[in-house]
Length: 217
Image 1 (cartoon, rainbow, N blue to C red):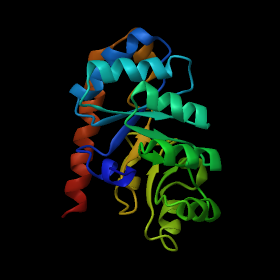
Image 2: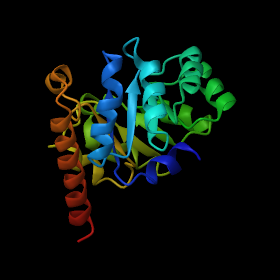
Image 3: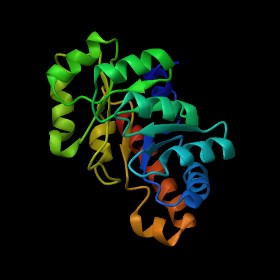
Image 4: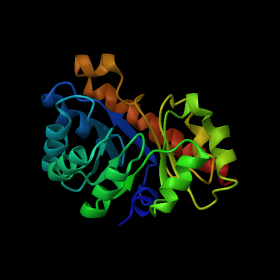
């Protein structure tokens, strides 16, 4: 399954971008998000616990879709695959990353925010792209503009997206999913308030349903 097929098959097109500081938080956090209706998680490699967190989540929830984010090297790609990642996301792209993606066959979402970057990714055979940082790179308006010359591209924007503005992105036909950290607020994570995280996930899923209903009217 390629990245587009994987993302478009998600019941909920919202992917929490998760930073794990304490490995013990990995399983209860994933349980809270999944119980709240979230379909996939992106575990960033911004902390040393990232790889172990992916493995712990996949062990606890083998049917869940758990990806690795902030993957910036072929070594990180290899370690993500070894940890059990179902997909790999990068804030950018490089020859090394594309070569790693070709070797491992795990769905890869490279990053692109300009026309040149989109062309480079397309030349490598990738038409599902991470748009990061979304809000500071022009937001939904920029994605709408890029969709003119690149109608074959589908974007997964992250960066500055919240429960209050995600509808701007989800309303675009060129957006297949959105990512964000609003589902894992630092205060809730620090206090291990998993029930509150679950409720936030439920509210997000409900908002997605509302956006879909408004779009289909």
